[in-house]
Length: 336
Image (cartoon, rainbow, N blue to C red; front, side, top):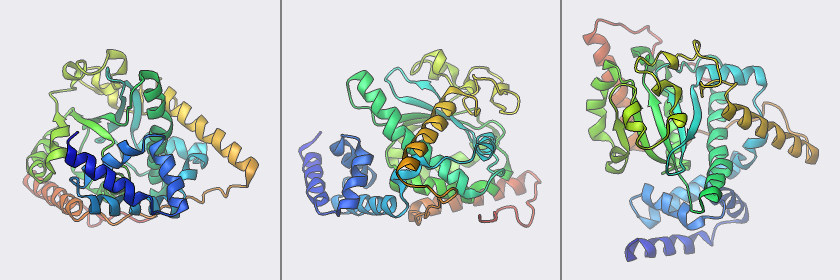
């Protein structure tokens, strides 16, 4: 690390001494014993501009305090609703890369996000982020004897349709939460099973991405198995990367334990049981109000807002070119 970068870390470290006690406590929950590495994430996210990184980090800490993010892992979503969320927000952990990074699979194309209210999708997403940062990554760090602070994400575009525009608002909200409060947590994004609608949109979107983001995105051929086996063992491949035709990625057709999206998969069972255990511990100290989790969605970065608008515009263009028409309410989703 260069002298300039080290100086930036020292400056930000010095500024962080002035935050209040609540913010200091939530920062400890964030960094899990690695404060300098956490400062680096925020500095990278703001191109090593100390003042901007400081504002971003303080805003993040305040967001955590105001929304009681430190307690989110003790607030289980009711089991029946959680199954609905898992059936329609397709995400799961399939294993670890050869470098020890968690491998997260995401079914972008087949996620419908229409079986529960927005707040549960957001709650579940934040819970996974916090479980990754407070449980999975510290465990991986201890196992490998070196700091592991990022994951690998494999995005399955199977089934991506023009109707994905209907989900753009909730996806933008989740993306904004990640960008502003969990920056630089993904080492590489692998995109697989790419249909025409994605390829056409990607040509326009790619130049708009920041260089550091663009470098992390790899669009792979087919299900990506060949390339992914260079960075992970077969056992850690997401289920939708194991067959060339990727039919296994259809969550309704594969409910066995191989499907990392399924509520029955070992990852989701461990996560849900962990949250229930934490709830029991918290309940013994003070009663928890059920269904009380609501989170403020931060205002998106102007560049991210522009990106979302571009995606929306491109999808509309593609719809017209392909003779599709949207319903009058196609893009606007009802708030919950």
